Amino acid sequence: VQLVESGGGSAQAGGSMRLSCAASGFTFSDHAMSWIRQAPGKELEWISAIYSGGSTAYLKSVKGRFTISRDNAKNMLYLQLNSLKTEDTAMYYCTKGTSVSAFRPTWGQGTQVTVS
Image 1 (cartoon, rainbow, N blue to C red):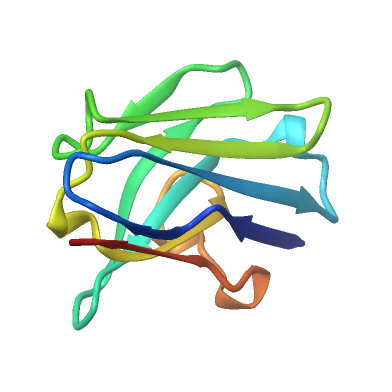
Image 2: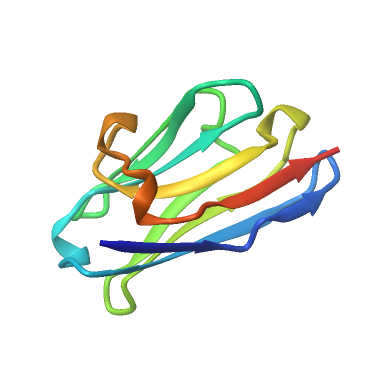
């Protein structure tokens, strides 16, 4: 499994950002995928999932601001972040599965989002 996250950076509060995750090494279309994040000094936090059929789920604090999507033809996972808040500052990772416990640090390096 290889997951390559990109698209992070710095933004002002209220701004937007789009994260991407390129997946390889497994049959992407067969798996639910999630975005998780880790803020400085805090534990990993699940924020959103998208199932193979396209249904989605969100952490309450990001619902209505973040949108998860996938392109099975390109083996790509996306996360659109709108109305960013300073508390969204974290390292963002994509992962197979629908929980933090499914995450393996060896799969990808993450992408940093910093909101000021």
